[in-house]
Image (tube, rainbow, N blue to C red; front, top):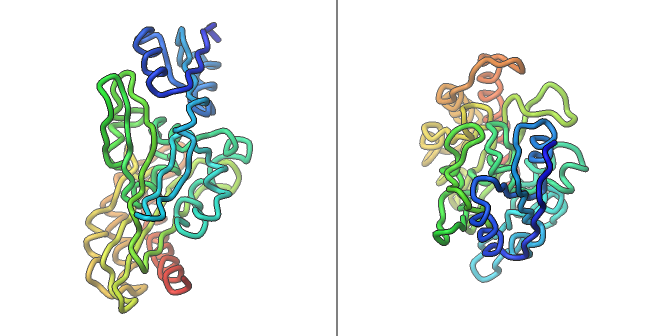
Length: 292
């Protein structure tokens, strides 16, 4: 591993200033679970490593009780989200996803921001934030800007972040009443496995507890980037949700996906998993809404 200088700023502004001083020879680091591997394997050879760990404003998880808006700092760890009773009760789709990331040791240090910025098609953390209409706040040399989490990804391992920009936090808008959300990942084994497919579903029902007024169907490992099956979502809106309707939405989501063969799984198998699990997750959403 190439030697590098380690910088530890205590503010976003200082981190950006350090990056500006050292330009393309510097890299940011959050939890380090991905970047340390790249350093050891020689895939990345920065002269300066800028750790963001001491930036307190990026390590806050809070809900505005006046607006019900949720703010997740980019440095919040998967374990923090997993253990939060607020997340478990109010945002089960986030809990489902982060509790399945890696091992306990990885979740203790890995961050939600790092999971997003790494931009792998199998990123578990991206799916719930897309389903919840999350908005990413970015800060760079030119100031702050926002974008929906769904628009953060350009290609595998590529995001819209400009040189020197930092993902500061993700904001989740207030969730409507009678909303249920859940996530599942399907792999070849249960422990520390990248998903063959990841599926998140969110449903909001009308006051009749039957008619869908909002739907989100989000897929991981189904395209080069995490994606929404918008055709299937539109199909569900204004319909009374039944198992048959959810089955049809699963078929539409599978057809809209861009799955491919890989050494880990075949495209046809991934499509079948989408068909099955969209229905199952939709039914689980109905159960969550009924039991609230």
